[in-house]
Image (cartoon, rainbow over all chains, first blue to last red):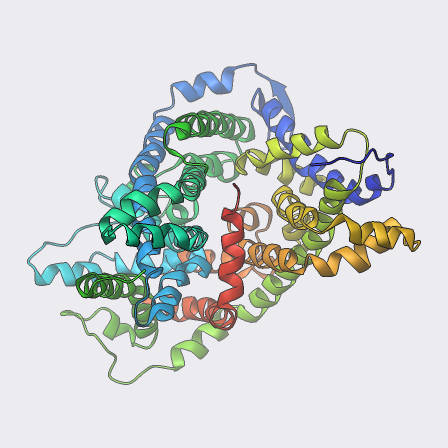
Length: 294
Length: 274
């Protein structure tokens, strides 16, 4: 790269001004104010009292918070690998020369543009214990009705199923474009060498796709840690099942906005930020071992 | 690369199964929306309604302010997309092409913000809206979303890819910085603008948490949040709820069907990193 010695062009500040101002208020200031809020107790009329680490201390002893954390970890540990592996498989299949290829693609892409509220409504109906399609179909095989959205042992699994279902489309699209950017010469060379489909997939496709796979894993991980919509929409907050499906963000929303405990809510958001940072940092560290950049 | 016959058959079988899993729920949604209440709770389960109850749709449309919700959503999506495209492209152009003090520091600061999960900002953003007296307004749904770090990063790559000679030539001809940005650079980054526009549109269309926080009046809601309220009120009459859901899903599916290629290209843009 050659860099010309350029004089400062001060009109640049006019170009970045609107964006910079907005970001400063709504993100930069918001970030620090939120951290400050987490050290305060905030009254109904916005009166703050500094309480030091009190919110964090309460949080450490809050069983519901720990459950929310455990649930979120559950969604991430089971959800992320499932989403990543399934979408790699689907993207690979959709990238083959097969009949009705564009039909299959369209079908699989639809959830990506569907309102989360519609997805929540729809799955609530599918999961309905007495009249839902799923229990009816399971009934044919003699399975007794499952209380998908109220049984405390099951709710997490129900959320997980919908999470995977709803997240696949987006990731398939990204992985598909990653596959299409793999130069054809690699495949030609492998075929000349007589490699079979399986060898080509594991020996060429997968290694060359690792940068995209890594990107998809990071995005899915961050997204899963922020799961809110599906839980909020599928399980009524006043039922027992809710606690057993609760995530960090639904708990944050309920504390900060349903109950108006802004200081406590802020503390929850700060803790989840630290967890997301830690997990992402680990992902970036581990990637050196498996991601191929050439 | 050619696949053997058995691979092809297996792939098609799997894809048919996946398609049923992905599209089946939407078909079931449509079928339910055409049933009578008694048909929805019949045991054993009834696959199809005796006569399609199209009246469910007019009933739901009368009962809930879908027109207002759609109008609000349209205003919010357009407002967000247009302001993001303008502000993000201006900033992206400056970061890609202009030299100014503290450029890298500001850029790195923004990069750091990109990693922060959004719930961190919500309480404070809400407080700002309260101070500006903007809660329960349409503007409140647009204002914090007008600014996007992601958009600046995305567009910066597009600006950086344009040959410098074009800009130098224009400068020699006496064009000012603003004219270069608006008349020469902007048309050349159209693919980037389309990608950001579509991504913002999808995001703004699906946004749920922020509208729930900042607005509470039904006539100031978007479809996404309005439909969420529907759930709380009316879970027993699933034929109505499903008709409402169809009304909310169908238009976007139609838009998607027409512009699928552009949608897919735009989403794919988010994945091009390194």
